[in-house]
Length: 267
Image (tube, rainbow, N blue to C red):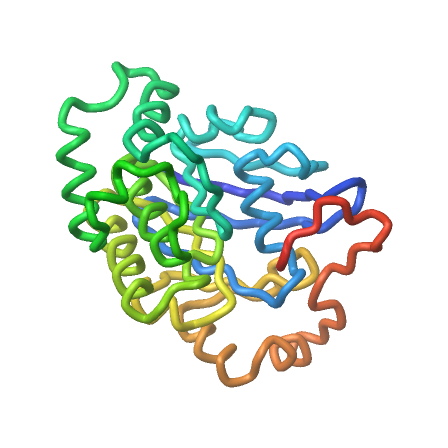
């Protein structure tokens, strides 16, 4: 059993604080959903955990099994068992998914990629309904949104990390792709004891990827946590209803325009 533990995490961009003290603990095999309005800090949390250079962590801790991740380069965080499924996967022309996975295994040490890697890639591609032709192309090169998210999920399945942070993995997916991706991730929680932090706006993802806990992020803080029923309540009341119930005025974190050189949708 492993544990991802986040304590009093503060982070921001260009001197502007976005995360204002986030606490969260995820155990192996658990699915935690993090929901919140645009600008509440959801994507900032994923970037801070994975070590994106233009996000500054100003306080707190994030550990896997007691090993502090903050301050480590991104590749070392991955080597310790953390995976990020990006909201907007990037194209890597000329680098196949096999090349990418080989490099990831090499960075971990322990003898590099397993000898049966080609078979595992093909098996996972079949489970996710990815045609083998996509395995020979540059990563995400001219892929649709759904194809990109399927390929991200294939990488997750083959690399077998301890924890996956999935930043709006449902974004841009049609109904079939959402089902295939969510069911594969759900299966990994039992097959491989994968712990998942699924960042999402919508409860539709959670009909397939069943959460053990649901957390609501507003104004850079987790303001409420509960079981799966919390997502259903949110569907009924909206974020404004939850905020009114809790007496919260600040749903999102407003960055001054002059301090916004790294803006991304829904930070």
